[in-house]
Structure formats: C-alpha cells, structure tokens
Image 1 (spheres, rainbow, N blue to C red):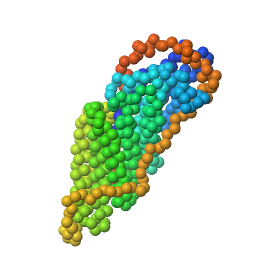
Image 2: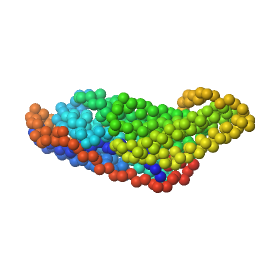
Image 3: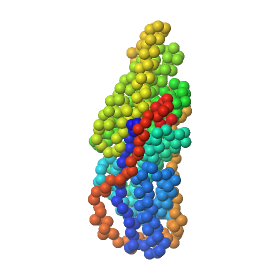
Image 4: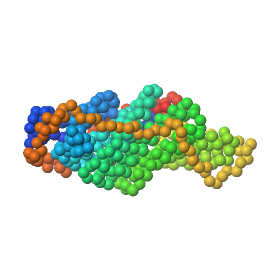
Amino acid sequence: MAHWFHRNPLKASGPVSFDLRSVVSSSDAQKICSDAKLTRARILDLLSNPNNTIDNLEAAAKNYGELLAGFVTDIEDPSADSKLREMILFRWTNTLTGSKPTEKKDSIFELASILFNFALWYTKHAAKIAAKDEPNMEEAKEVHKCLRISAGIFKYIQSELVPKLKEAPEKGEDLENRILNAYIHQSTAEAQEVTIARAIELKHGASLISALAYETSNMYQSAHDSMISLEDPNLLKWKKYLLFKINIYMAYAFNYHGESLLASDKCGEAIKCLQESKKHFDSALNFGQEYSKTKGPGTTCRPHEHLFFRKLGPIVTRTLDKCVRENGFIYHHKVPTTTPALELKATYGLASPQDFEVPGLSSLWTKKAYEGFKIEKHVPDPNENKEKGKDVPPVKEADISQSKKDPGNSSGCVIS
C-alpha cells in the first residue's frame, strides 16, 4: 500500500559539550553540565527513530528539558533570563535547506529547535502507526492524538519562544512564521483526516462528511498559502503534497455534498457538485503524480496510489451517472452553470492543536548550584570557533515500514 503522509527530515545538530569549566565553581554546577550533555545526546538519539515509544521519548525530553530550563530562565524569577542563556553555542540545520546550520548563542533557540524535532517525531510516529496493515481503534486514536500534540508544539514554539529569540529567524528557516504556520496547519489537517475516515467508515451523514472534508481542504490550503511567498525550490515537493491534499478533500467534499443534494431532490445542483468533484479528483491525481516525481527533502509517498484515493474515483463516476440518469427520467432539472457553494461549517469532529507546556526546572537547579556558575570568569572556548560554519551531517533516521496490503474496510483508510 502506498504511503499517505509526506514527512520532512529532522533537524540535525552539532554535539554540545556544555563545557563551562571556566565558570563552573562547584560540583553541583558541574553535574548539571555533565547531565545536560548526556540527556541531550539521549533525546537526539531517540528522536531519530519513530518506532520508539511515546513514553520513552517524553521521559527523555523531560529529563533534558528540565536541565535546559535553568539555561533559559532565572531559577528564582521565571520572567527573567538565565545568566547562562547566551553562554553556549548551539548549531541546528533547517529541515529543508541542507547541512548548513543556523548558529546561535541562545538557549531559547536550542529549546525551540529541540521542540521542533519533538513535534516532527510525533508526526513520524503517527505515520508509522498508520502504516500498519490494520490499525485498531486505539491506534487510530493515538495517530489522532500524536498529530494534535505535534500541532500544539509547533504552535507553542511560534507563540511562546520565537518572540523571545535574540535574533529573528531568517527567511525560510524552520522557526520563521510562515514555515511554522505550514506545519501547524498540516498537522491539524492530518489529525482531522482520521475523523473523516472514521465518519466514512461508520456511514455518518453525507452533509457532515462533506463539511469535514471541506474544512480539511481549507486547512491544507492555509498550510500551502503560508508558503506562497517563499520561492525556495526545496519547498516545491512539500507544496505538491499539500496541493494533492487540498484537491482530494475538496473532491470528497463535493462528492458528499452532491449526495446530500440528491437526497433533497436537487438533482441539477447535485450533478454540478459531482462534476466539480471529478475536476478536483483529476487535479489531485495530477498533483500526486507530480509530487512523486519531484526531487526534494523528505520522504516520497505515492498518495495517488493509496486505496483511500483510488476508491473515490469510481464512487464519483457512479454517483454522477446515477444523478444524470435520475435527472433524465424523473427530475428534468437544469444543471446550474455555477457550482453550489460549499458554505459548510462542521459542528462535530474538528481537530485543534493540543495545548503544550514545557517541563519545569530540574531538582538539580538549586540556588547553590545556580550560584556555582561564575559568569564573570567566562573565557571563550577556543574549540567553539573551530566548529562555526561547518556543515552538520543529516540525521540517520530509521525507516517507517509500510504495509503492502490495502486495508480491508469500506473507507480505504487504514486509520478509520
């Protein structure tokens, strides 16, 4: 079975030693530095594999986050910066621009970057579950939850961390507003896909499914539109994926709206809706094929070969043929020249980003430990300059294994 989700690569980072020997004056302070180095290496290692468990990832993220917190804010006044905030150089690549890193002496930049990878890991873990032969109900819920958590983390980075950076992100960098908006909308839309698949599988009303599909298409449109002003060729592949999703869900929206209109004896309008559905289906097929041929960062899925896509074409054709036949025999309605508007607002099933909070301070951050850092004695690390400007190799990510079987359900979606 073809992959359904596109995933961009993780951010890569150079190693950080937390070597502050010139300012460390106590064993408590030294332990914080030592543990920060180890816990950072641990979380980066776990993030490279979407097959790891959520519990393991969250525990590792908490351990590092609690230690990093003391480098971000003052331990007694959370509204104030830590005296250590600008002591360490952090180097992170961006997901779409290769191995040239962005380099900042800013612990908030480090926090935002590690959380960015954490959010990406949740999307990859969700894709891994969805790639199973037949995920059960609990696994479908986990996919939905992971994608909402991911959206919530991206939103937290955007609203709470980026405004506090010492330097604004440059055009096209991961922490830039337009890129973050794209990730927020994509993760939210993918979570809503689970709801749509469930609604189709349980044969909910056509009007509800149409409204959900319309809202989902609009979310993907928002993700795509947030990057319109960015002309980086590295974004082209991702944009093609978003255009595929925009059109496939608009095709679903018009198909089910057409069914709803037919049930209300509005056969002429139903025909027009189904004709519009066919147009969007054909556009989705075109974008899916273009996407799979486009070179660029990230995984290459083949969404136009997925059963959830393949099943829609025959459904649209059958329903349109039925409408035309019924119109000729019974209704004799004129087919309107303009397409009926999809002014639909789903009242159930809409996904939203899940609120996210960063870990608090580690118990190691005592007043004594904090005072053990004598920043007035700081001497720049000569090895730091040696690393500046050097490329950072990409993360060696574990593959997401993909079932070769089509799902054995009516919707064609594995996560229904």
